[in-house]
Image (cartoon, rainbow, N blue to C red; front, side, top):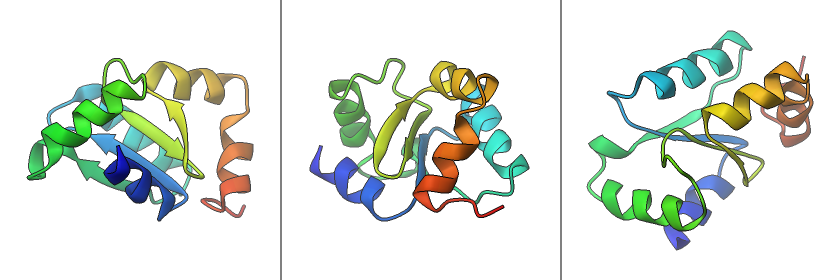
Length: 102
């Protein structure tokens, strides 16, 4: 869990993903469409990926990917991100975290 905390504190928008996950791709594309450059950690390409995935599970991420952190805080997975997007709270969250300026 320490690794997750460290990785999410370093950048305003962090996504834990798997390169073969279609929902991960969708969430990454959504942020890129906003003009935001997320820091993406592909768990299936990292030596400590399984350990990080277990830590995400302990934090309550189910499924474990995608797991989105904005400003160091867990937002959740694709359902939570899309809910924030649809109720127009996602962009203000990104602005507050310094991930987006416009």
